[in-house]
Amino acid sequence: MGALAWVLIVVAFFVGILLGLLVFYLVPVFKAKEALKKADKIKYDAEIKADHIIKNAELDAKEATIAAHQEADRQIKEKKAEIYTAQKSLTQREQNMDRRDSILLSKEQSLEDRTENLRRKQAEVDKMAEDYDKKFAEILSELEKVAQLSTSEAREEIFRQVESKLSQEIAAFTKLKLEEAEENVNEIARDKLVLAMNKYSQEVTTERTVATVDLPNDEMKGRIIGREGRNIRSLEQELGVDLIIDDTPEVITVSCFNPIRREIAKRTLDYLVKDGRIQPARIEEVVEKVRNEIDEEIHKAGQQAAFELGLPRIHRELLRQVGRLKFRSSYGQNAYKHSMEVAALCGIMADELGLDPILAKRAGLLHDIGKASDFEMEGSHVEIGIRLAKKYGEPDEVIDAIASHHNDADVKHIYTVLVIAADTLSAARPGARSENLENYIKRIEQLEAICNSYDGVSHSFAMQSGREIRVMVVPEKIDDIGAFKLARDIREQIENEVTYPGQIKVSVIREYRATDTAK
Image (tube, rainbow, N blue to C red; front, side):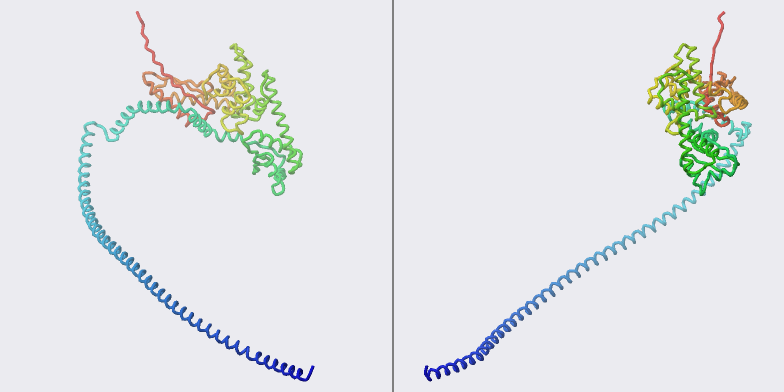
């Protein structure tokens, strides 16, 4: 390669460098100019948009201002309308109040006028009353002179005439009401039951709810109570009774309506006192032992009753109920012994009359069976006895004897009559119940004396050991209505003055006989 070529190469090299420099410096200049142009355009566009936004904002602000003014105007108009309505209403009220005031003033004036008028009339009435009182006193004085009776005597005479005139009407009305009341036998029976309970509540409650346990000394009371009362709490919880420890020396009282639980409690305390070991574990053990003894005793008593009376095929649960009667008493008479006695009497009477003595004794034994559970089940002992007899398949004769032996229902079978008679004999004979002979005689005499004290009574008889009183009256002095009234008066006096067990039936008998002799 020659020198020319090298020269050309060098020249080309420098030319390239020069061109590169020119490009390096001129390209940014052109780019800067182009960027400035774009920036100016963007700025111009932004200014135009800003102008538009400002103009739009001004328009929106003007529109919002106009709308706000319009809304404010509307609210102002509404408030003005409301204020106008309120002012109108207040004006109307003021007018109404003015009218009312005028009306009240007129009424007040009218009332004052009326009051004044009433005062004048009252004065006139008072004056007339004085005149009438004077005239009445003058007339009364004249009448007293003519009739030769004082005012009090005349009043008493009028009262006697009115009483005589109305007595028959009152008795007839009373009889009618009682006849209506007889249609509701249950209510009358409940009333009589409540009356009997009120008469003998203290005596019967004491007999049925309390038993006493004798102690060797008063120190034993502390042992029965135990530390912080744990022994007595355990006893009451296990036995279901109340133990009353008071100041009575060497005695603890057991209170409970259930006679069997009361007997269990009494025997348990007797065991514990004799044993001397009194603590909760020992108490539980002794209570269980006594319960088993009582159950066995009840079972044996029922079996023994059926065996002695020769009664076959009685349900074992009924026999158990009979055994429970051993711990039940009524007016001091043991219910078990009473039932055995009634059964024996029924058997004797049935044999004499040619009836079935076995059925009669069965009815007599079970007639008070309800008393074995009347402290546990609801209802009277008659109702409970009927339920038990029906439950265990007793014959109709026995059920009727249970239902009717206190005349609570109509008698349907002859055996019931035997039970009623035997029950009366067993319960009413002197010494059977807690009533001595002297009191019994005094009560009979008192009943007859009450009956004989009434005018028109010829004589009276206390029958069935004082359970019925029959009064014979003179027919010319007492008519049929008067006899009914006399029976009620005697009954009320007996209830108020005589203490008696059960019920007393008052029968007034009026018999009129017309006789003549043909010659």
